[in-house]
Image (cartoon, rainbow, N blue to C red; front, side, top):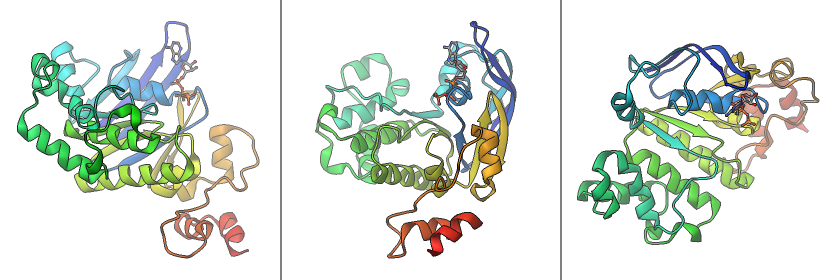
Length: 282
Ligand SMILES: Nc1ncnc2c1ncn2[C@@H]1O[C@H](COP(=O)(O)OP(=O)(O)OP(=O)(O)O)[C@@H](O)[C@H]1O
């Protein structure tokens, strides 16, 4: 569905942010993109929606090369990409409903959206999505009266109302507490599953990524140094991605909603990491 080939990005400052990155995302597949600060994670996402112009390489969404597109085609292609941001990017003075409907901006034309006259099917879909993300009781609340987790739910509903083919998600939980972070990650993963949506999620929280995502891609200095399941992220692999560090205790403390087993035992069972299992048995 999304095929990135030999993607290279050198900023005008001379920084080589991506060095011949190749990556495919299948329909319904969610990828967590991890790596240290400056590894190129945000640049990769920004290249996919062409907020920055790659220096070299191709990015195909359903066979169409985004890098080669002119303005009209690019605008159309961007509608197929749902964006979810760390800082939510909501319009503070607008209601939850209006923020969600703003995801339709590309489809309803400037004047209709300016006058806030959205077609009834869009309004119905917004209600449905707000129900799905658990905010149906808050449709009229202003965005600036919401908690971080609620804001992110609005951000998710806004991304989904454009009926995207892929989600590009930049640090969705960086501003949230641990429990809310898990709820938001779980929601994103469930929605991707329900809709057969592919996603690339930039994330610093390795344990959280390992808990929810089946494929992890590790970037270091613009190069993919790991691409595989969470259970393959051994200490050596983490060192390759992040550099030398004591990794004990890094691999998560589990999912609070999975029954009464201590959380770290569930993660240990799920990810099959021997060192973690030893800790879990204590
Ligand atoms: N607008 C820019 N102009 C010049 N260099 C940039 C720009 N944006 C990013 N870079 C450089 O590109 C490299 C990759 O940065 P990028 O922001 O993509 O990394 P990241 O992995 O997303 O980091 P973080 O996790 O801190 O957000 C870094 O060396 C950074 O300094």
